[in-house]
Image (cartoon, rainbow, N blue to C red):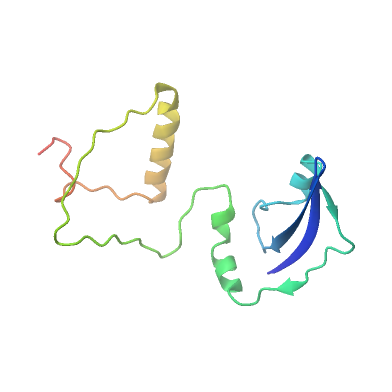
Length: 133
């Protein structure tokens, strides 16, 4: 929705930075709570918005949930991979998941499957059936 320039000081370092303002219902990219936790000192007289971003505002509003901590997808968007006629399937040895990460990996895969990020394929010219045929 807008932006402003200001100087930010943290642990003796001062930098000029542009902050963007979003109409976000989720946790901010950087907010007052984060500024406080990091002991940041923002220098400036007013902190008022110096420019409005009117164009593409609808894009920010349409995709705000992508800034949240929850797993989500672009609405009504399907990614298509174009395969040329001369493309050849290629198989590489699978890398094992470290034992310590196994449970977290299974949980993440189950979540992506549940949310619909992945689509299961039984068989294609690129994917064999589970029995290897």
